[in-house]
Length: 327
Image (tube, rainbow, N blue to C red; front, side):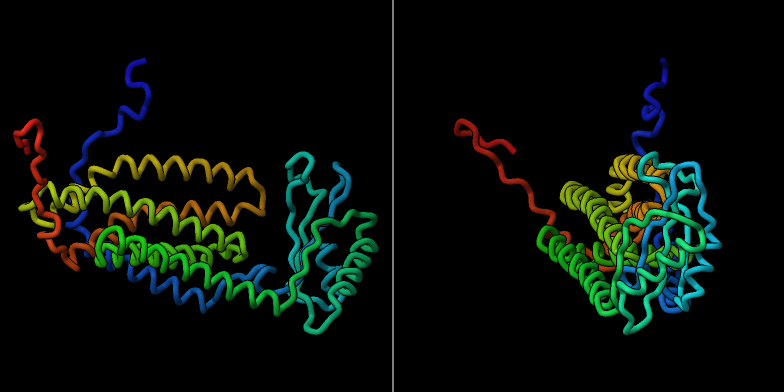
């Protein structure tokens, strides 16, 4: 079939002027980052049980029977518990949302006996909706949740510092600054998405952001490798043109890799159930902005900072073969 595979229809060589619009997109990135930071404080993150403290449990009936979510929420709220949330989830045996299984979350009162509260909740639900099965009970105290939140933030900060050191040793300090700026940009905007969509910020979300950091760094290293190679090859070409050339030469690889990952995550988001939805959406968004930041955040900082071209302008030493030298 002519023209197949369809990837052959994509241009093998592009000549986009990325640097020309770097200031415009740079201002846009700064505005979005500021808005995301403000959103993390007002209205703030939708903390999950992992970070806010509380309990969650799955309530299920045999397949074919349904559970009234409003009745469950009313029964738990009548006990004086706060932040009660009930949502339908897929059954483990057939991975279908048929109304027979719900996930219940609620805040635990300070100083209360966690086991006793969970027992009272189960009794109230059984009395209201009839005989049900409880599974997946998870209880997190306020002290533990605070420690988890601090540990999660420390993990994100440590990952960023280690990535900076890696780029610094592999390239130059200005390359490291560009890479870290891209990482911070991606993390902040991902937090902004979490706030806007009111996604639950849990340990799963921390894992998603750490994955975004790894993906963004991988994408940036590909661009920087080509940029370093072209700085040696085109010694008299203006730095802006070298950056454009390097991005264009790696663009197809970057886009194809990103699109492939997004396609897989889209399937996971819509078929993986409620538990994996937020994780998949955050990761999809992070991959997209990671690709964007490699082009319009990390690389333009190299242009602003400048590069010592002399370090890349060393001629290759001649290799002696059979007494004669060849360049």
